[in-house]
Image 1 (cartoon, rainbow, N blue to C red):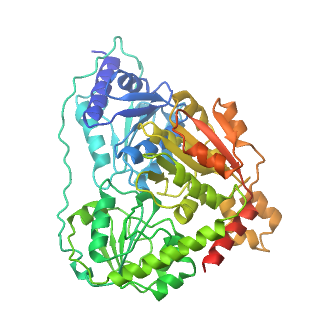
Image 2: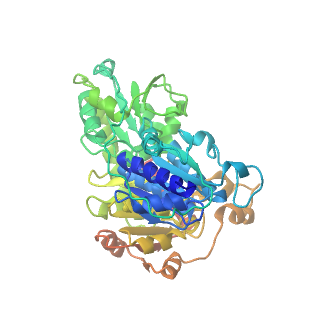
Image 3: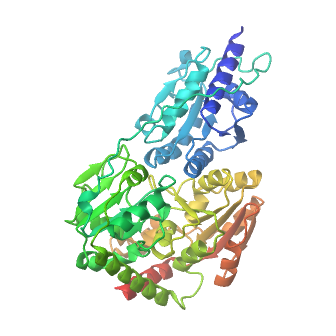
Length: 548
């Protein structure tokens, strides 16, 4: 058997092992050195092979798909600089605990370190940001086991990205096609957690506040509602793990403004579930509060606030499902918080009533209120996720996703495309700078025809920076601020979308906006709303002042 045939057979077995373990999609970028992998994925009927021209975009599509499904997508690229373009998405997947499989093709080991064309050191390319690195034994008979082990490593708790590097020598094309292997059922070795049902018994009768953050597993909301009901505990949940019910506090971020509510009606204990919530006022209070905190999370990262007296290494959903606390006697504490929440909600609505549209708080609130049942709302980092957290009313019939592992704006459109490729209707809310950062992904959205509605808030620059001290500093100065933080561009996002063949429009009334986002999504489209950065700051401050 020739070397090319041995390589092709190994790759067919590798991909079969990946398919055996449940992977259903691969994002493949064009290149020569990855030919053996590309042919193997194209021939495997259980895996959809999607061609994506930009590796950076492909990586974030895998992130979005992994967040939507909980299962990894594979990304495949050629040798040289191609693999480095996955780096931002690998970092996001790592810190957000998203399963992801990265397969980089490489030149032969004999040319490593020689300066040969399209060659760089790809061994341990992503360092500590991947769970495992494997220098694949191309040409051996271990391909199927290698494929299965890669997926199993990605899915093991806590999930995350894994990297396999495959060195290929020429010729890259076998003499004849290699038929895909027959499916084989491999048993995954799932880790089990021994959790005690009495873990929360000491909270009974105490004034307990529950703060939940991050993306959680299915079943989280029902388990949290049951435990919160037993403890009589108010629940403040991040949009990515929203819960609705009698214990839900919908305006936690606004209640934390000034900290008066949290200090006057302070809990005895805070039960923290998962990563930090989006709201800075909330996690700032947690950081500086003397209230006892119990953190439940299964992550390789420690408490970033350093304020948790007790840390329980467990998946929050599994922990809540195992917990069975007795009925609490502190129900008056819940009613106090519900009363404050209602008052703040009323004050917020009154402050927003009559504001000129488009304004960014109303955009976030109206979008979440009007998207179709069963939708996924993908929200850009920076101001959009903050506005959703602060002003939108939680819904149990939609899902909110965001790239909050490292809170970056890169790859946001691509991530939403990946989410839409899981079969969901996705509405994306992001700012103009994030849209421009990932503008080439509009071409991929059009080519793939995904059910994705992109809502861009265009305030002609980096709107979130206008809230920072730099915007008011005499040291920085207005001109320097505009050049390096404000970064006005003067571009129309709808015109850019049109150039890629997407349907687009500029919306100026609340009625039109609500009507558009409530419609089913047939294919990719872009909606642009134009706001003003300075006005946006004034609106946010006025709402918070009215609530104080």
